[in-house]
Every structure is written in structure tokens, then in C-alpha cells.
Image 1 (cartoon, one colour):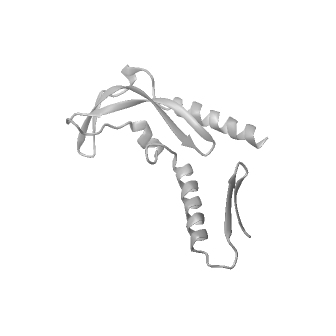
Image 2 (tube, helix red, strand yellow):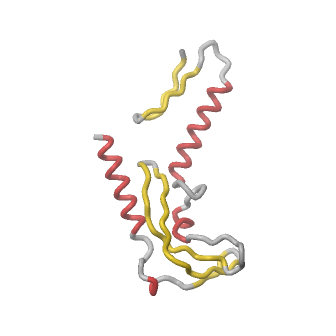
Length: 128
């Protein structure tokens, strides 16, 4: 049941994100300024990201920097707060918590080894 709920949540999130930006070129700005830089609309590009419920894909408008060799931006990714060009803030937070647990386990100097188990049902920390 949990697997079905997670898949449903993933599909809802994907569908919602796919509808945020218009696919119609005429309904999208052709250029704008951001952070002191100028950008011009290029094309829609595909993106794949990870969310707490799995991987999703969507197309978004990509804008090129008008200065040569400067990186462009995808405003939708910025609005979503995509971290490391790959994941949502919620997933990044969960990964940060997992890293904290791993570091805590490494610093442990108790008489038992700490075992960190990661599975489909969550994360478990136990001693043995």
C-alpha cells in the first residue's frame, strides 16, 4: 500500500510541475535581467530530478546568458529550489539528515558497533 501511495504522490508531483510553465512560446518572456545579468529564451529542455517519492521528469524553458561562456538558467528550477541541479529541497533535507546520522555513528566510541540500515521502509540505527 505504501508503495502505491508513494507512486501516486510521485505522479501528482510530476504532473503538477509539468503544468507550472506554459509550453506556448508566445506566453513566455523572450528575455529578462536577473542578478545583473541578461538572459534570452533559448528552448524547452528536459530535466530529471529526484524527489522524496522517486524520480520525475519535466520540460522547462532554458534561458541563455547573453554574455559568451556564461551559464544559462532555467527559471522553473530556480522557483522549485532545485538543489545541486538534481533534487528537491525536501530530498536534500532528508539526505542531510542521513549524513548527520552517518557522522554520528562514525564518532561513536561505545562498546558496540553502530549499524545503520537503509531500506525501503526507512532508516534504522541499532547497536550490535
